[in-house]
Image (cartoon, rainbow, N blue to C red; front, side, top):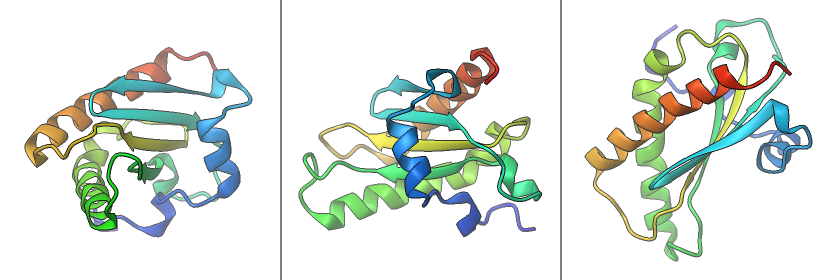
Length: 138
């Protein structure tokens, strides 16, 4: 498998998981971490298949329409965030043993530089890994 691909199996598209990601019924299975300009929601999920990409999180990226009216701006930010995640996911989630769902929300009201967003997203993803390690077993 090519390491820098972003296959469909790593994209979160299950409506049921998305609903429980942002409104968890069982708080011990999920949580959130905040570091400007991102807020990341995470949820432990059951593995669907027995393949190695199951250990990499499924993600969804959200850019509020309230802050960015034009779809062009939202799409560009979404692409930049996905690219940052794609290039750094293997080193951050290499030791992950439980499958996860991640919801990355860009909460800033203005566009930031790519370098700034990359630095902040890497830091917050490391915080997510630490928060998952500290969470009670579910």
